[in-house]
Length: 176
Image (cartoon, rainbow, N blue to C red):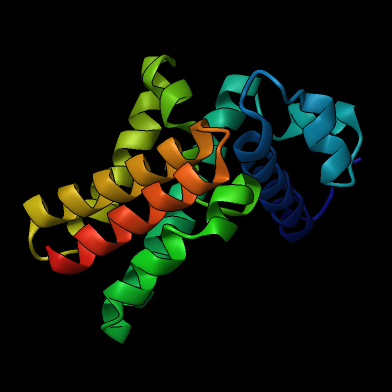
């Protein structure tokens, strides 16, 4: 049975959105196609009407996550609130909620060891984010500092050290 194109597009977007969230929460290897489809409210069998493979879904989920991040960056640039953006990014909430946060901070290590196609999807999105700022070197510095700060803060057990990492990076970005 064929569904109307609009309905199919809505389902496709829901699959990608849920995959992006689950991959950020648990990593690529700890999420099955069945997990994604269940979260999207669809049957496992419907997956192949939308994607040829899990790898294709990963690339779509990464592209989606970076598109969301780009939107946040563009909004912060238009609001002239870079300080508040870095404060939100380098926050306890972001640290503790990877499924709701940045794709790069949640999946950078996995992306570094992934397929060329997945790296290409990430690179394309990253280039768009870096281009959203007038000063490319400054954008690279800020993105690297923010991602690195969140990754390190998530990697330690001691919450005081984790909070210290977030606070130190926030302060350095303000003074840069």
